[in-house]
Length: 104
Image 1 (cartoon, helix red, strand yellow):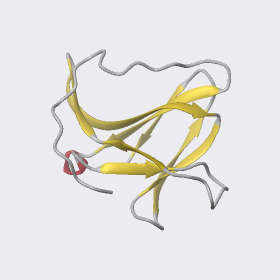
Image 2 (cartoon, one colour):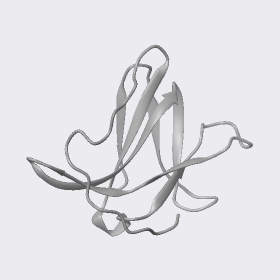
Image 3 (cartoon, helix red, strand yellow):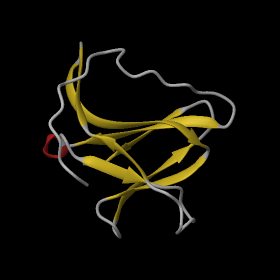
Image 4 (cartoon, one colour):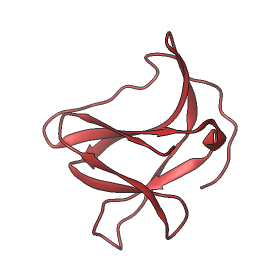
């Protein structure tokens, strides 16, 4: 995980293409992870390439929260990595749906 500065995002700033065997993952995170890139990878494939997303402040009418969004994922389980070897949680992706996992 690395740190970056990013402006808050507003409602409607993320577009997800869902359907068939494609879903998405939202990792809800504590404010302390704002600006960090969190990696995920398909479970059970030690050689799989990891992908990452930035934890950003998400502002809506209900208030502010912090999350990383991973669109366009094939159905399956995806561990989120705290570091190169330590999983922080796992999200199960179903086609056509958005899965949410809390890193709190």
